[in-house]
Every structure is written in structure tokens, then in C-alpha cells.
Length: 104
Image (tube, rainbow, N blue to C red; front, side, top):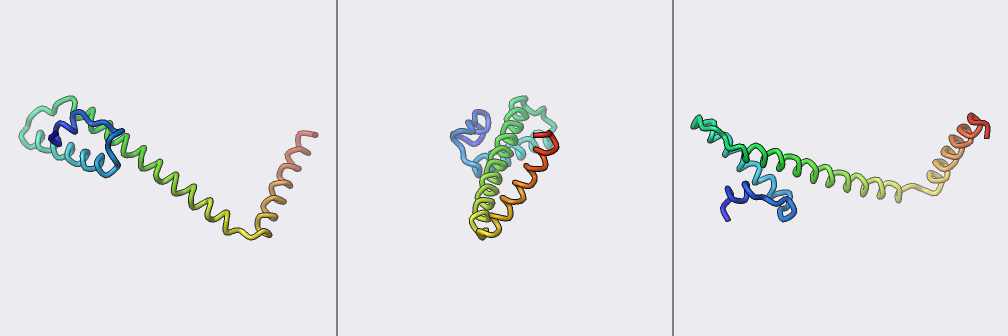
């Protein structure tokens, strides 16, 4: 299957992030060539490029969020018992204040 066919008919489920980025780069180059030759760009090209951008953005955001969760978990595991106790006491005090404010 040619790269052009892949761009026209790509399935995000079957491609990894690197392949999606490469396909988007090819699509932008193709768009540029249409402009260079003063040809009308096919409608499918804009649709596919938008779909690729969305998929790349979504996957990158998912990757970053997973890394953020991993870092948060590792940081939590590095806390001393005294730090954990201090955080719980602070949270308890905040809850106590909220309960007093609502008259409970």
C-alpha cells in the first residue's frame, strides 16, 4: 500500500504515534505541492490532516497524563510517615472547618 493510500484510508487503531506523525508530515508535504503547482487541494486531504492532528494530540495527551500519574505515584511513595501524617492532619482540619461552617 502506498503512503498516499495510507493517508487517504488511514486507521488510527492500526498505527502507532510515530506512524501517525510520519503520515501527517507526508500530508503537509502533499498539501504544499498542491499549492506550489497552484492546484486545488482535494477535500479528503484537509479532512485526513485534521483527523491525524486530533489523533496525535489525543495520544500525546494520554501519554503525558500517564507519565504524570507515574511521577505522582513515585513522589507519594517517597514521602516519610511523618509527611503523610501531616497531610492527613491538614486534610482533617480542613474537613472540620467545613463541617463547622455548615453547622454539623
